[in-house]
Image (tube, rainbow, N blue to C red; front, top):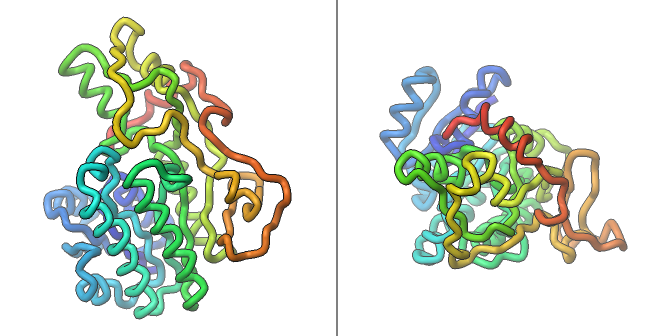
Length: 305
């Protein structure tokens, strides 16, 4: 099975590459960072590596030829950076995703899985808005082609590059304390292994055109900080632009189109007939919580990717 991974040198992309031998997938790693490609190639030298940008449609389409599956992880992901650079965030996350869709259809790709975020659910910032549009683009594409387009939507991956865990660890080393925007803030958490399982579900599910949401646990940011440092080493600095106090993985308006399964929610396109008449929300302040001890146990096994 030939798998084309956009943003393949990122935290999730690299982990997917690490699982390919076990799954008998032969990956092509497509990214614009030659240094990260060289590092990944030193670990997995027998795979194919292509330097490229998803905003370059012609090269993307040519590079994607003769693959079976596309996993689209490439994106600008930092909330403050996207707020300050909305045009570039839109160019990559929206126009780039449209290019992935069109290239996949042109190349008769069997299945495409896009990576989204809880911030796409009732978005309050530019990053979330671009990912909401990506979800809509993928769902529309599932209606106008024979290619299966699915999206996976989840919260924060513990230890992923640019996320809060390595940020806190670096602050402890350099400052001796961590900065927290709001002690009441809550977030959903997954390990990289759980994030990969979700992507695999997006590839193998019988659904098409759905947004797949895991039933994952959450914690307050204060509890996460306390799992890493004592309370005396925590400084509150105030909420940043574009941040929510609590995140949402399934919004009330989406819930009527959501299939509630054992491990996942499957959000169908809004143009489909409702599958439920009982609205609900799945938010980080009401989800099952990790205790501080649970978080400490997880963090012992979490590397910074």
